[in-house]
Image: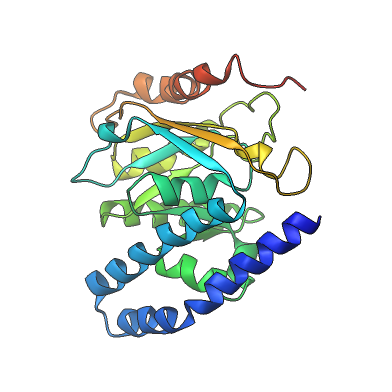
Length: 243
């Protein structure tokens, strides 16, 4: 666990070092200067995310960046291998985004402040009404131009066979009528989950062709989760370690 402790100290020090910018971002938020707030926050977070990979001495390979729509928000649908999936998307997709997070994260000082500024939505899974409201809020944010990331497996596969995608995860895309961008993540689990300690690893992220959800028929909506699951997981078929 020594490697993990050192990595956490370095990452925490980085975040503490940005406290001045955090205060500035909060001030801009209070003043309603949204464009300035977003420019500040979306300039810092990718730098933080790439620093996380630097700390773990891991390298990242990205394929398909040119497929991302430049002029509209999207819903990223990715497989979920490990804790490093979120920094991977923030640091290497080149597109600002938010995500739906469990409500417990809203209680973590510093981290929760940045998440709120990123327009992340917190979900209380114990309450059906609160969960529905969180999806509606996230969909509204997509309509405002904030892309979202979703992990429809619901939990980390940790290098084992991927978990079946939950259809309910796609409601956000349907409600916002935004394009779905399938993303394959391969290798993040080796950084921490493989040994329960930080290790260097090679990580690959594949961005696939966007799928437009606006105007989809009911049948197409029903088929979308399995369709996206096939796209996302096909490149993993030879690389996954079976449990």
